[in-house]
Image 1 (cartoon, rainbow, N blue to C red):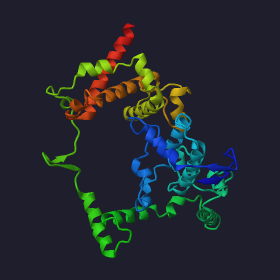
Image 2 (image 1 turned 135 degrees about the horizontal axis):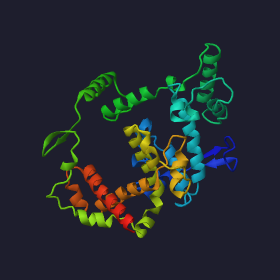
Image 3 (image 1 turned 90 degrees about the vertical axis):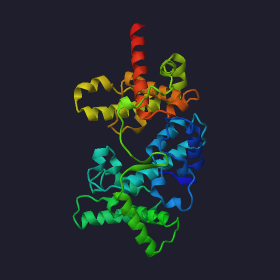
Image 4 (image 1 turned 180 degrees about the vertical axis):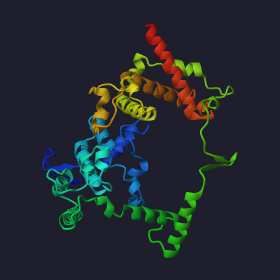
Length: 361
């Protein structure tokens, strides 16, 4: 599709956005364990007419998608990736403004477009809506309603997310699905579906296994994660997961994603420890090399820039996981009792071995 010049961010008078760029992007990363275009599912790219009403499937309007287009657009030969990125950013900004339901949302998430609408000069959301060239009816109504509430009713700010119908649309989407994927549901079907939805909230989280019956979801101790009877060849996996020079070259295309994941691990760890003593050992200064391009693209001031040794640890875990899903070890890995704890245990061994090897050299 074509869209007009907006806010002087296009190289030409009109921009071109193509849905095929997103399909090609998804196809190029479909076999990878880590992805730049996080969140894009095959269902979001191939929806039925009924599923097009499901707001949760609108995953293409995401900051991860725009970052993926910036990083991989030229490498994957996507002809219109720049215009597609600009178009998604326009809709995403409009969407952020319309979903503000709390006056401190923009401050907490460090995003100027999530600030409430105010009459103060320099309000980025107001300026953006005034520059909109499409969605005229909805945007004009929001602007007039915001001005009326603040000028006539003396509101200090205006929260557009409070007057939207997304929760109602989501509820009716569940009614249609529970009624057999029917677009027009009767009043009786609505009452029956409502009873089913309330029943789902009161059920415990269990798995119904044909072999073991009802299994309650719970966490296992790490000692139970690996049995001696299992045939997973630990020594072979540890040896093959060592980060050599050749393996680092193979990982080079996904290093920015692994660096971003390492930053998230650091964030969760510091939040759990609640101690600043570990901060300097986990977080480094803001390096803007090729490894940190994804973090820089998504950062609004709150992301963590992990130290290189933290990134190496995440790369070790990724290396182990790649070996687990390879042909020699996949079946043995699937026979384990707890996949996550097995991965943690062997990754810990690989990281320790790599540390000892580096000290000796």
